[in-house]
Length: 180
Image (tube, rainbow, N blue to C red; front, side, top):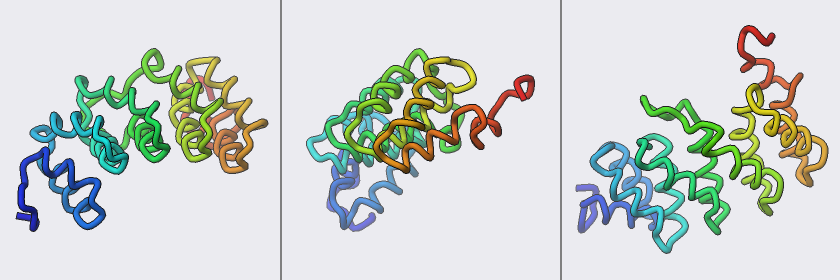
C-alpha cells in the first residue's frame, strides 16, 4: 500500500518529513481521519519540523477537543513553518468538521504575543487572521490590529491587519448584522 514498507499511523506520520513520501502519507492519514489522530498528536513532538508542520496541517482538518491544547502549544514552536501552520489551523473554520474553534480565552493571548513580536513576518501575518476573528468582540484585538496596521515592519502584515480593523474589508464583511 502506497509503496511504504510500513503503513501504520506512526510510520506514516514519520513520512511527513520525507519529501518523497510526505504528500502520500498526508493524504492517507487524512483519509484515516479519527483513527490516526493519536499518532498525529504524538507527531507534534517529533524532532523533524516538517513532521510537526504536517501534523499541524492535518489537525487543521481532524482536530478534536482533546487535540486543541496540543495545537495551541504549537504556536510557540521554534520553527516558523510550524507556527504558521498552527496559526492557520487555529484561525481556519472552513477546514473543520463539527469541531468548534477555540475561543479568545484560549488563543487570543498567544496570537497577540506573536502578532506583536514574532520575528517571522509570515507568522505575524497568520496571527493577524487569528486575532482578526475576535475584532468584533475584544478590544485587545482591535488595538493589536491597529498597532500592526500602522507599525509592523512588513508591508504585507500592515496591509493584512488593515483588512481586519474597523473600515477594513474583512472587518466589515464579518460584522454581526446588528453592528453594521
